Length: 316
Image: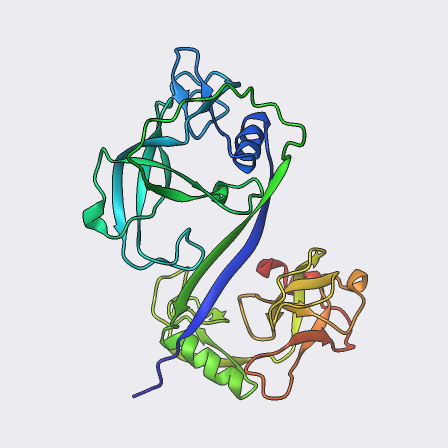
């Protein structure tokens, strides 16, 4: 029985965006313990606020303050909180219509168990101890049996408004390659690059996919390619990646598509051993391995003359 390969995989990047006047006021207000909505021309108050009326598409900027108390309109219990969620103990995701608002805000509701949550229950905002101008400035909602809060009269004007935010995006999952990619990975451990040939069009795909993407036929014939290849196209990376073991690379550097000799599909890899501004299409390269690595660390120039454009133009 062949070994079944699997490994954790994380896709993560910071998403930076600027804020318009409405979102700026809303997030700045949370920092100041003020919840703002926006009023439409027909008198509805939307929380969280948007810049355009979802019914009429009109631009709306009439900011109004709503109360920090409200009513649960619907909810779902979260038995196992995940990394980055508002609470580390089980809680309810709830839509809460704050007093003075006509729409509901999604957030966490801290409750001892699902039996303690119901549609129509009264709740209030629990503010975070440290607030920076983010939705997490509302730490969560909590049950509340006091008097309804009174909407304030804040205008939405602040002395030091936020102009932008950085929102981390992250996806964690476990990847398990199929037969073709497992063969490819095992071959890399022996410092060999193996693809598979289509029985119809005879193209060799590296990395192999188990089927020809053009003909739709299963591929089984293994073909060793490379190790040398040709840079078909490339980009210069100027933004430093996250500080992880395999991405802590000084910028600028070059990432390229490389057509290995004998392959009909270009793979991507980093180019090293040459100044970034000297990398070019047609550059001949070879893999550089580090001790104990299961794949090449990068590719470097071989010193050969550049490949003629006609030899790789179909792989761009």
